[in-house]
Length: 291
Length: 226
Image 1 (tube, chains in turn green, brown):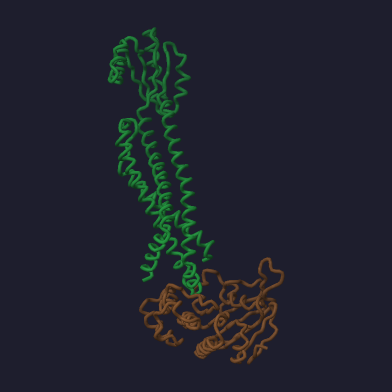
Image 2: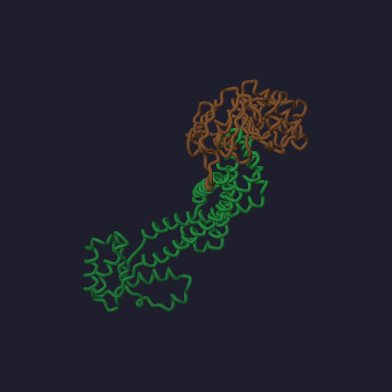
């Protein structure tokens, strides 16, 4: 009977003040969506870092007038370098083949470039991609070297952008969370006010504190859980419409977000939504009802 | 049953204490009136017995429990041994007489079956047999106070506190309520009543403790209003 009483009080509570309940649920949903998106991006960036840094190369381009001797010296030196894991020599023909592959969608560009215009190069895999600077310092003045290009620098820029998007989502989540918390506090106050007579009698006859608080706290928790469900729906929609839809062209660049990732992030959203609402409601009641 | 030992209470921002070094001892089964003008500190005593207000100095013991040092989480259970009646009845307007009394049982964990057995009994005792399903607005003031008494007594408390229970009632109805409280007292329940209804005090001839400006000025075994 007590469980039934508490549950019916929760539904009555949410319904009594339905506009406020909806406002509370919507802000909660937006906040949790942002939180979920931020969590997904965190995993996404991690995945991408793993993926890209594994394949990252430092390219040492040789200038056009490089001599046979210089090339051999450099090759020996690179092979002996403890920083270097792997060395691949790319001659002009190989470079042209790669170039054609890379720009196969732009035949005009390919036609404009002749095989001997492309520089030959050494492609290095480093034991630790972050030691690029040491490689650069060591080889930039070596005879025959034209330019040293580090792919990880480019990637860092991309990752910086992704990280800032993630931070923006997180910041938006926090701001919306504050709004959601204030709405929860307000809703609980209104609920407690509209039940002040019952609460006064309950306190008087010695109802236990948890029994007085439970309907209010659960009301907030239910709102939080509904909010997180809506957030899940929003994330699913975002994957469906954005990643599989208009952004699908970037699929090769972005590592894919699986349904599993989204389902994995849902407990986080539901947990944060439920716990934060419960804590807010409980603290509000402590101040407002003094129970 | 109830001991106040040199109790002093000064509310914040108050110029003088509401209770000033008050000592009273009430035995089990006694019927005690606390009388005195408004603001004399009578209601503060009721609040202290309910663990709503803590004294600044002194000790309050109710039912063998030291209320002064009681932690607030123990308050709910402590309250179950005390019934309470107020001037303004404090009934739930959207519940019938039966539901009002049953509510008090159900929120402390009693089952509906227990309520079905006990509530009609106690409503019969307070003289409301046949009016169980009336709402408070369908009852007279006296009848509403009977519901409140039924609610306070349904749990068979050791102590019944009544804070001006006849304050809103006409003299005849007041006397009926007093008869009811007297009957409850005869079952062995200690009754503590705060009032300034001189008629009632004079008719009942029970122990009277008079308070003025926070001090006890009279404590008389079979007293009158004076």
